Image 1 (tube, rainbow, N blue to C red):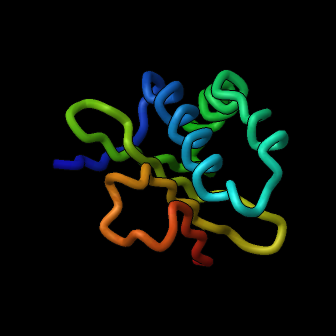
Image 2: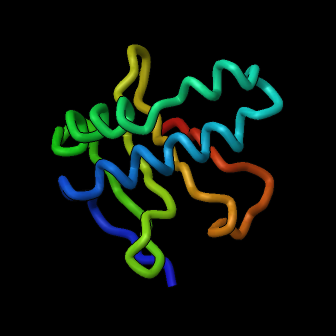
Length: 104
């Protein structure tokens, strides 16, 4: 069973790991492998550590058997806010996409 809840400080590493894995999966046919291989878990983990406690950037995580399998975040943008949802492919019921961006 997948459980969803608000991220805590211990979740940053898992979020960074999922972020890298999903980007490499989703963008494999769109972005050169050399660029995707530059995706760095430690940089993304640091990014999420800095932002996950910011009330302007609420972050939610999805865990299965205590393992991080996805996350969602509201991302402030210049023109409007967006919600990014990234889920490892084996935990999705819809197989068409790993990443969904919706305007709110």
